[in-house]
Amino acid sequence: MSSNIEKWKESALFKKLLDDAPNIEKDLQNFNAKYRSFVERDDAAVSVVLRSHLIVEHFLDQYLASANPSIQGWGAARLTFAQKLALAEHPRSKLQMLLPALKCLNALRNRLAHRLDAEFDDGSVAPIREFITVWNRAAGKPIPEGVRLIEEFALQASAWMHSDASMINRHVPEQGLPGLLAWYQEPPDSDAKPIVPADA
Image (tube, rainbow, N blue to C red; front, side, top):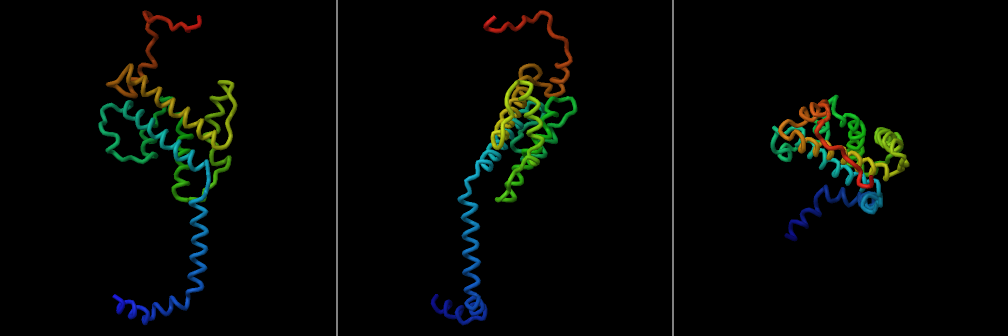
């Protein structure tokens, strides 16, 4: 083995690398500094965006399975988030209001996946802020800032999709979304007992 090393040391490539050693050392120092900046970056936004995306995708999968009961094995389909959003798009579904903000969340996640030093400004979260502003103002709640805005959106979006999936499963499990849309149009059951608040 030592004879191979000796032969290598006599090669033209080894001599070129040896001559370039000071520059190679500088490159290595620059690399180490950049690598450390990625590894040591304490960025709450990265964690929140990635976690929020995973949570929202879980409830999107649940919704799609309920909305399309004839399609089996959603997990095996290995669809991208964008493909799942395309399947969820329906002009009469209330999820239509969520789609711009869901697409925005996916864009934020993709930006992180392709650029470790990605930063987010107000413009990059505008559809999320618009959605949260409408519903929080209606509920008399403040509009969160920074990463709290992303967390609040993940919570509300997940709740919306879970609610629709639950209504489908409760009222029209075999019909999926078309059944839910038809159910919305039915007059209330006159024999149904009114819901009375517990403190009434």
